[in-house]
Image (cartoon, rainbow, N blue to C red):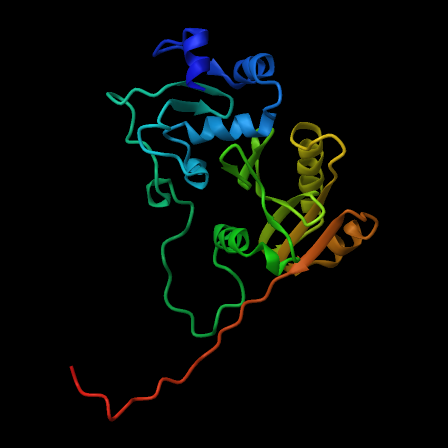
Length: 242
């Protein structure tokens, strides 16, 4: 990316369109995929909250400032906000903490919680499923045509797997979203001959979603459940007080 900035002669106030970046890479590094380029743009954008998923390094990766989904300029430390490097720095869409529930929770409070759990435990969906990685970019919030896939994974047969999450009930409208992501990945990210399939995970799969997916052999549905286990802690009377 820094070579590109130098090659294009980009100045501090110049606006850089994503299409120009993709075109430059197509000429210089044609094997680098569009999704990977988009992810690196986010990783190098100091104000992009999703960069926390791509292990952005302070200083080294503070190159751009994102103006919108498709336009960037060079980061100016004199006038721009402090770069985001940790999740706590990003704008939070979560509601304020509410009073403690009397009953054990049956679902994740936020979709990000479900996403972060599954990203670290993809094997609970199926053995061999693991997070997609390419050129230092992971499959968490993977960019796909101006939107973000919740999780992009790879299965034991090297198929790309688009995982779409719904923290509560999943309805049939999620199918269109999933199929769009699958088609984008198949067109812009998959290797030649590499298949793409989809998984929808929700607290509850509605009847209309079940019906909508009944004729889609490359889409699977999962319902998750939360459970709480208690372990009694015994006081050791022989243990000296400290």
